[in-house]
Image 1 (tube, rainbow, N blue to C red):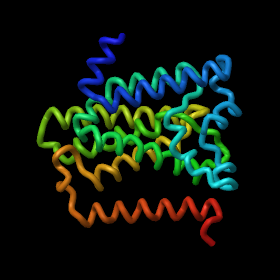
Image 2 (image 1 turned 120 degrees about the vertical axis):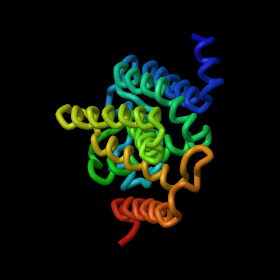
Image 3 (image 1 turned 30 degrees about the horizontal axis):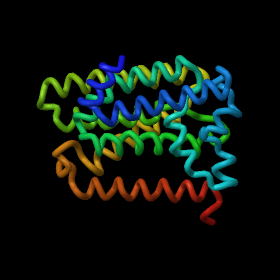
Image 4 (image 1 turned 30 degrees about the vertical axis):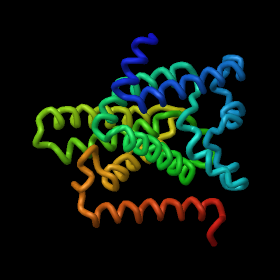
Length: 229
């Protein structure tokens, strides 16, 4: 296992670091919660997205911390398997620094959408960030569709996202706003910052529009929290 981690870190250092950090946080959840990692009070204590605390106490950090929290063993196993296998592809596509930005930006936008449209839901999980990752990869495939390998990879990513969104609509306990927001956030990030070594591919007008949308989202957060009248 250590050798596998070492090799993965060599190929995708950010992916591996996020993976290890998320697993360690889950271990802390498991120990402190005595195995009850799906306990709402425990998750809120750890930093879950919980609208009333964001609104009343300005705890905006709760739009970031849920990315690294999980409710239940299957929850983290599913998300970390996705990160382990798809993360290196995204990190190679964007480069390590941009990949970190993509992951966090997608997660934050996903949690923001969840806060705006489902404020009374306790939300945790890397899914918003993972959907951000998929959003970026899908745009990459669209941008370079002339490459059969990239186009095929994009088709697979698109089908995976579509199936997950469809199943989510018919399941309970899934924060669909987080997933949709993450997907949109990943696409926004890709337009603003581009891909590894290809940052000038999108027109400046598109990039500035995404910056404006990001600012609008920040304003909406303040309005929802009563910070702007």
